[in-house]
Length: 446
Ligand SMILES: NC(=O)c1ccc[n+]([C@@H]2O[C@H](COP(=O)([O-])OP(=O)(O)OC[C@H]3O[C@@H](n4cnc5c(N)ncnc54)[C@H](O)[C@@H]3O)[C@@H](O)[C@H]2O)c1
Image (cartoon, rainbow, N blue to C red):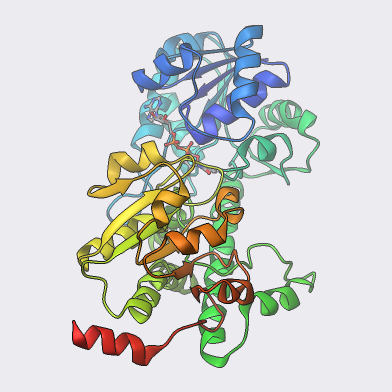
């Protein structure tokens, strides 16, 4: 099939490359000229495991190309995916400006029947709204169908998830268009649910809100565990064996970030509000998460007494491992708070240094984890990259000014960290090595 994917971000680029890989002719369109220049010069603008190899292979085979020209994409395709960003507006609603602009463009450039597929995460009713925009701007009066096909890939495992989805959701008014989109996804061998567009749009928000709730739930359990002397990892292990609960998304930590959960929660709250319903749980999930992101600061203050003038090392900037995405990452809030409190920050991330440099100021960016910890008064592990899990901890301890280690992702074993001489703080367990008298004394003398 001839496919056009509009928007070459995490979703559009990965989907486009995967469709090319399973044998289709793909044109990827983006309005960002730098991105397209980069993609046309043999480089990809994002990091995703396995993506570069697939990209190079399909470019070489001629099954995928990249352009800024929407007209070229629309005219040469039977199916057009909309995969542009739908960020959060100040009031919490999803910003549909990019979807609207692409829909108008598609309508203007249509030269025959097209199936327009909305892959962006959009409020309930958007499929109908996009159909209306296309009808109103469709000068050639061509037939078309608009299908809702929400995306569930996870950054960090986006290629794997696209090739091995848990399910494919297709929301359509028309059985022919639904059938074409179902056939397109058959090679992925996943259950395909064909439903109405409103339910398809809701499935996406409901799924993300549920996953975010699970994270905030275990983080609240973690906070209680710290106070009652329980170990949240043991609690999660015990809970997770219950098949009704499952062990997924039960890792306590310093909260979720990324381009999806925060904005999708706000959007589903708005969707509810617009029909007179208050989605109370979603509101609490956001509040719990905002507090959880600053957990390391609480622990830093406990450990150091005060942060002013101290050097704090940050291990990991991306919102999760295996991506270079720092949108809404806990690292941003943590760094900002340390700086407000007068601390100095050194940071390193295996893949997100470039994206971080564009938004974080007054941070010493270094080239490896050992430079982060060198002469640091405390270190915070923010993102659980494999590189950090395999650090030489003896070396880490010896390089630090004071061996205060705040493990925001419960990567290490407390007993081992204590044995090595660290003052070790993690999430949802008791703090190890903390000596409040000592720190109070230091704080008072200073
Ligand atoms: N990132 C994820 O993990 C993920 C997962 C599932 C769903 N989604 C949803 O998919 C959508 C895209 O997310 P993303 O993370 O890929 O976003 P992104 O910001 O990485 O990419 C969006 C791309 O769209 C381009 N774009 C914007 N307006 C355009 C226009 N008018 N014409 C052409 N291109 C335009 C941008 O330049 C950008 O390259 C969002 O609705 C998001 O909620 C994202």
